[in-house]
Length: 175
Image (cartoon, rainbow, N blue to C red; front, side, top):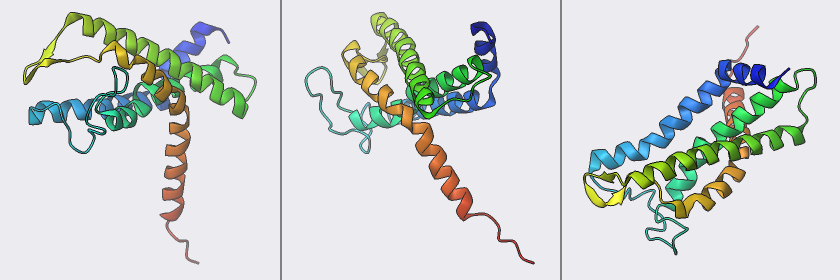
């Protein structure tokens, strides 16, 4: 299969859209909380609470939890689905599955970082916090790539939890 067909097949994949939409919703939840409360600080997710140099944000816990889904896992799933369709005649080995996930996650984070960089340069500030840019500072981009590299395991963890829950909640068959 050629690249164009693999891209089209990825775009038609229900699994791709499920992960993408869910990831975007998870990404938007903290933003919605900030606008609803009028504060940039979300107490539960604001660990360590202060910036460490320029590269580790004060809301590191939030960043890890959110970025593990979007753009990390969404890109990982896109990479996996693309590779499955590109090499249609061969099933993916475990190694190829994770390499394709890594490539997808890195590509997705790169695209998202370019968007964030563009937005940061526009200098759009939050109305309730005039000193806080709506977009991420480019100083945190390196940590985004570290999170993306780890997020290739997020789908596996989620599917394992889903399988454990569905196995434990199967209705018992009576004779």
